[in-house]
Length: 260
Ligand SMILES: *[C@@H]1O[C@H](CO)[C@@H](O)[C@H](O)[C@H]1NC(C)=O
Ligand SMILES: *[C@@H]1O[C@H](CO)[C@@H](O)[C@H](O)[C@H]1NC(C)=O
Ligand SMILES: *[C@@H]1O[C@H](CO)[C@@H](O)[C@H](O)[C@H]1NC(C)=O
Ligand SMILES: *[C@@H]1O[C@H](CO)[C@@H](O)[C@H](O)[C@H]1NC(C)=O
Ligand SMILES: *[C@@H]1O[C@H](CO)[C@@H](O)[C@H](O)[C@H]1NC(C)=O
Ligand SMILES: CC(=O)N[C@H]1CO[C@H](CO)[C@@H](O)[C@@H]1O
Image (cartoon, rainbow, N blue to C red; front, side, top):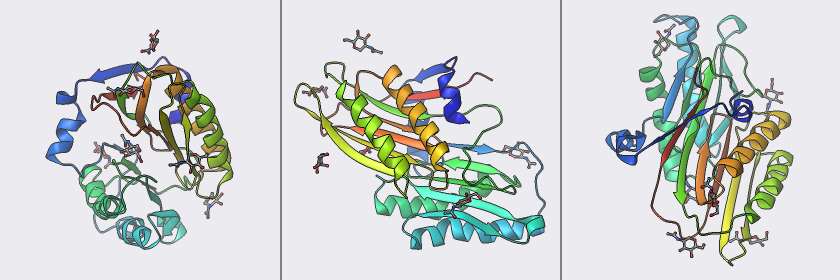
């Protein structure tokens, strides 16, 4: 479980300069996945039943998700022996146009990045797509070797940020209690500046998994980025974004992996 691992912070923090980070790649292909995770398990063959089912599933994960307001939970295709399971979802603060585009292009990136993989997870800046030949619904996605957390932080060490903790703790409780598993709010720093928070889980997660994921991620954020007034933390399972109206444009890309 990606977020569980956050607790065991034997993690390696690799801070990459903007120039050599994914941002550079992103400018070559702004719509591509931040990182695909392809399964190392068995694959499928061309013209197999699984391929047919997966292609049908992709339609659900993109077009039906768009028609459904930007998400599909617990989508399945095919008979039990060759069934494909999938979930797709936009992040709550993505523009609708970006959300649509993300869901539209996700299947083509999936087949390009993870050809013939039965199981894959793709994290884009505006959406997340996950599919498998096994029922993973409601569970956090445990990836085989490592996990990535996509972090964009805006540095501002002058601000007093302790008000964020109470806000984020409250938002986690609200998100877990809500049906769409997200919550949004704001609070005021001691210096009078305002900070906004968004926390969100992958929509198929059980409340327990959502709570675990967000609690761990918020803990990680507050421990490791105490002085950042704006930041975004995306994983395959949950998302935390804090932002203020004015933030410096200084960005960092941080890869968090467990070093395996
Ligand atoms: C999705 O599937 C999980 C596990 O099978 C189940 O617990 C959950 O209720 C389902 N969610 C929806 C919205 O159907
Ligand atoms: C900030 O939070 C307060 C109370 O929680 C709420 O009434 C207000 O609408 C929020 N402001 C914005 C801009 O979201
Ligand atoms: C955050 O700011 C405090 C006070 O300026 C400083 O002591 C601390 O080292 C900073 N922490 C990080 C992780 O930058
Ligand atoms: C965080 O949320 C704000 C407001 O919704 C948004 O403008 C910003 O792009 C998000 N930050 C990142 C790094 O995604
Ligand atoms: C840092 O935060 C303070 C207080 O919120 C704000 O006045 C200042 O403009 C910020 N600095 C930058 C570089 O964003
Ligand atoms: C079985 C199979 O096709 N596995 C592939 C999944 O994706 C990885 C990374 O793209 C490939 O190296 C595997 O061969």
